[in-house]
Length: 470
Figure (cartoon, rainbow, N blue to C red):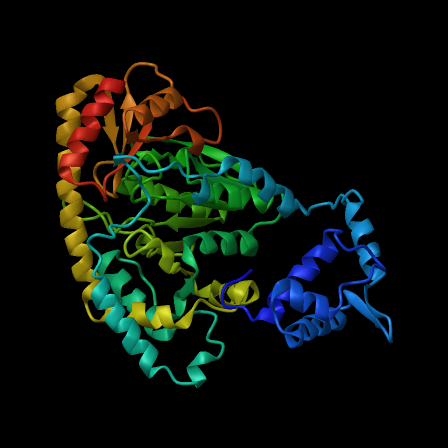
């Protein structure tokens, strides 16, 4: 029985279940309303209302002067349900999604947390000013008119597009107008829309190896022919890009997962390749807001003079993942195309959250929050590097420590990545392997360590335990 549900609905539901599971067969007479009343301790009115619902939905039929019987149609339904299910042919996308489900790490499959979880790809919830966010959210909700509750612009709330544009010009040297910003449900939707708009089955697409699983699986689902370009200490080598590729997907500011930062010479070479190949570049700047050594390297998009770079950003890494607001900055020639693609996909992103975020950015709260996060991350990063130096020394090589919120440990001797991860769990530590992010077989084992939600003392103890494992 369901708490709070009317009595007649509870009685109706009990008989409906009994009919569907075969307790009462087709054509069988049901108890009278008087019997139900006595057996269940309810009034006859409740029993009558329950039977009226069964009659209305076709589960029962009434015979004048005889009583109420289970409908013959129920037997047909049950017998058909016992037949073996039909084999339905999936589309190419459906097949690709089924294959992807075996490879990607879905949240529901995440291991249960332990004392020292070096998780990556998450935001610093401890630092985020939730009280200020709630005040803005309530203020936006109170002033929302009835007209604003209708469908909104597929490109996004103009105030938010303007705030994002202003912030990107100042923080990431992205050259854009508000009209070029398309607000989306996270950066994953940006990847999906780009694949839908530009890729046909069999098209060559260059992708970093290793790379973000979300990018790789979206491209596979689109039927792209993936060309893996190896990533070294200085990131992707543009000289190894195929001349026939239509697009190249890159993470130049903090390569995922290795953490390599693409130097200026290679950025310019990458743009030159796009010009020669008449290709587009997708710049995923997933955590470009976090940098620790001098001035941040500005965006690749800001260097682009030909409109060949599509820039992707997200607030999942800086605010919180559940917000599900990301964006892409489209070259002017493709703004209308992306706006229409967004409309075809899901009309638009939730309006109230957009307005709240717009005010949060425009009022200066976002930049102040980012400064606090950078300081905290810098402190945690120092604690992590000190602990690695103290407990691991020259047994490992470290990459990715110049930006972002994770590093990679590369053991200098040949070890099993999965064995280390399993042994670390027995010591109360959660670490993550680089292996799943490779398209082919990884050349060497690597361990991903995020640090944005760990205290310095937890980092110190976690690395001490990891040293015992290694």
